Length: 408
Image (cartoon, rainbow, N blue to C red; front, side, top):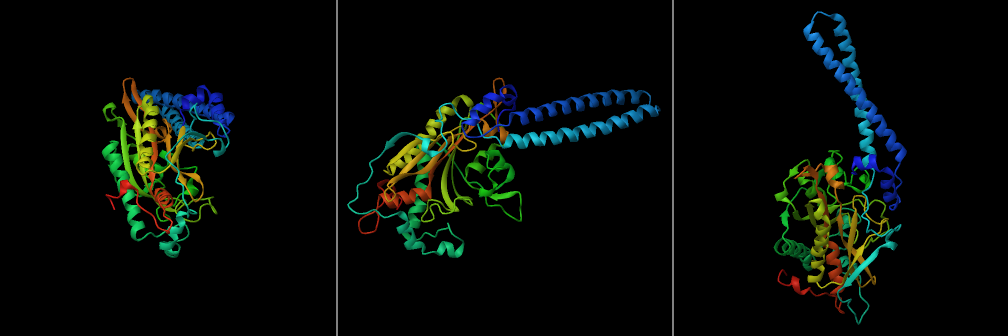
């Protein structure tokens, strides 16, 4: 959520920034709502003040029926004023919740991923003496349509060595982030409430992408561990000594993938259920840029240790997510597609999520909103897919990355 003071003071500057996303800020509507709020606030305060004065007069002359009638009328007005102000505030909240985050000034301007900027490429792209097979070749041999049989499309069953590899990839990631990068490991609920999803920006805008529990309408399957982990400190005031906070969490993620029909239907790239190791940071505003750099480095380290070729890409304004101010994607090489595919999005959300989640810290000059960041460290299914493709052999098998052999 954007700072209301900024919207009041500089609505045109906000509109110009958001236009880079293709979002049109309705300044006139905002100014009208704010004007109505001010009038309603003044009316409420004025009538409340008059009622308070009248109440004091009544206490001095208890038998004055005229004063009591006036007080009764004023009490009715105060009640109406509160309802009017509450209604206007609800409209303001709905208006604000629909507005995406302001973009960092370094974000490249463009309509979509075609305008993303490649920062660098690392690792050696494998040169096969044979036609590389897609990772779905390995997955289909063990799944055999069973995921669809027991659930529906975009669900997969893993077994044997590949199931083991999937499990140890997650353990390797957790070990690296806790032992080498200093993150605290968490285990969190896989079901989250509406307030948590509002806090991180999935609701109300992206409800169609979520799996909702029909018998408990306020509960949803978590689309990413970002949601429960970021909301751990919702409505809290952290101390300076607590910051920065670094959390790592391995969890399943559930997404309906609305609007993605026909995309990546084979293999593990786009699933309704997938595992991910998530990195979440909470810090002071002046440190968020440095923490973003660390987050990218921590996620990149996994790919480097696995010796998978990858690249870093700064997302353009049109490709940057709703809640993010700036995002750097890590894309891993897929030989069968002869291209890089996203495996982690490392985002700085500035104070956007904190304002929605009321997450503050005690600063020298009072309470201020924290900055939040997160990124995959990494998506386990996509990492497995990248290993199967980059480490495949000419006999239709694959070998293990050196760093994982001690786990196997």
